[in-house]
Length: 479
Image 1 (cartoon, rainbow, N blue to C red):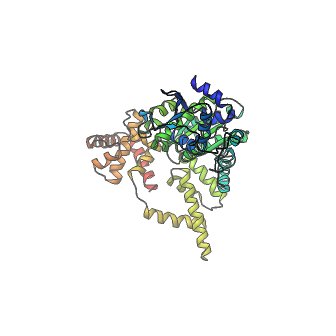
Image 2: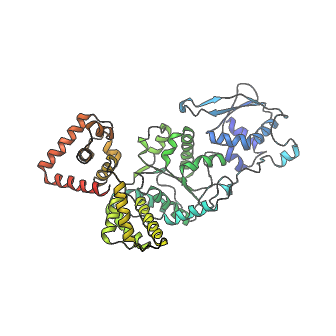
Image 3: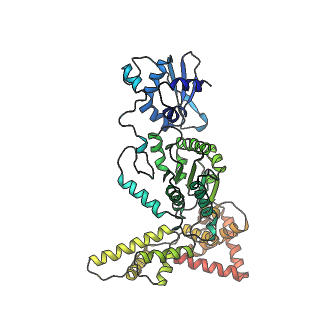
């Protein structure tokens, strides 16, 4: 009630849009002493912007309304549960209030914004590609190029990723038709190289094509946005926001609190917020309960790494586009040795560079020759590791590597775990204690039990023996 009454009085000094941007997010309460206010900020990034660009105009307005002092409260970032703590009060006097002392100028322009203030046109977005008032044509070109490439048509997948792709398409189609998000927030998680960035970009591409304003970027741009745009939402005119690598927010409580506020705003205003994680959010130990509870209210789907058949189609398509004259055997080997699309792209880049350099030096070299030369060099440097074995087994059983090393006891994950443990012992000859350290710090007796179990199954069951043999070959081929 008090805040609303104060807001009405401030409407004489500030426009409605200005108050909506920076006043509404503030927590304002009357102090014990008459004429003193308590003002609390939603997060540290808001506080910085307020102090740099708004405090002077705000205090001039309060002074004209008879307010004699302000307690500014600041979020205590070292302890989320401690909430706010008071800092020294600011006693308002006409000689102390920063800004232009000329009353006529103040009345004419109460919401004075410094020359270095970032305008709406200068915020990071897919639409213009500028950041913090600095020209960045390269950034704009890069973002636009990403959205052009990140489309549903270019996203290759098979049956195991039907759910995340269908959910992403459904949300994009509903929003582009003018509807509200069917689930909010939308969370996609998966291992590196599974295509999370592409899937979020495909959604952003559809929405941008339909005329909606979108923001698409990495979570690490989030603090910069919050510092240049006050309020809960870093870009309030955006209909949808797509933030990649959201697990990085776990390292900063202030960023988590800002994400919580952003989720609340997006939910109440019908905007979509889509995030990607490299693991299930519930397994990120540093994420706060407030953020996790809001994530749980949305849709969380897993995007798994592409299978061999998907990688093979991708490799065939892009070797043709790049005019790399590889035979079928080499393309199959390329798709088999690399577990994700990003690795295939990297290998193709090396092939192109190797062939180009040999030609510059006056040597005749085809893509096939380059492939053979690079394969030999990389084989000499490569080593078989427990992580690679776990990845191969996880891919075969269509589960994540995290599930293999977890405490889950269902039949599928237990069999995959026991098989991976057996292969680590058989192919790497590691000690029981050493293997246990890679599988969730398991006791050496548990590791021995898993090895004996798979060994007995190989002796008694032909299918298991065949499966273990095939997995051995796959691990050795990917070294």
